[in-house]
Image 1 (spheres, one colour):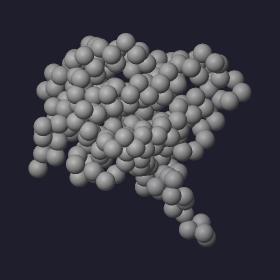
Image 2 (tube, helix red, strand yellow):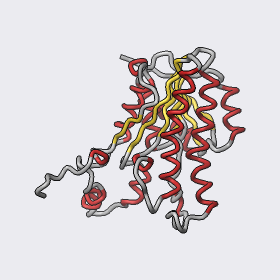
Image 3 (cartoon, helix red, strand yellow):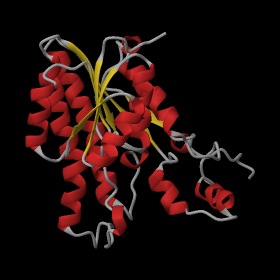
Length: 261
């Protein structure tokens, strides 16, 4: 079954990690995909490998969204996946509430929150003529709990959760069947995590240490996140809007330890 047959889907941050896996899954399900990324070289290579279109997009730039609207004025699905932690490329400086700089706070929120706001605004404009569509916003478990050392990232992901609900309710008020839901992954094994873990003979031990507090004792996979996005993009989730879907191996459920442990 190809659940996305005939659907035009835009995915931001599609060159690698979760975004690339979503693009691959959407193509397998019959979707017509526009892979977008700020990294044109990596984005073009990924699009060629997957068999989809590429469009360069900096999600924090309003003009880039306007340019996308000109080439894709009508879409069925948008996945607002692009985001940063603030620690990319060896970015220095603490991100705790006392020492984080305003510049770093703004940089993270410009990409994560403002990029999602601009994406939702574009998607509404690109979907309302037909009156249907699915907007999928990538939040995080970090948007549900406090992260002292990554305050800007956690705040931006919490804002994405809430804005998704506002978008869902607004579209419903207008009488449109434009749905908006957020996805909240925890530790998903992506290139970002692989860089942190490094390599060597003790790699498996370091991976196990990273997920020691996760009830399922493992990382999630990009394919698992992509499978959830396929469901949210398809008509099978037509009654779901304003929802938060969590993939965290049981972290938010509490402790898997028994009271006697």
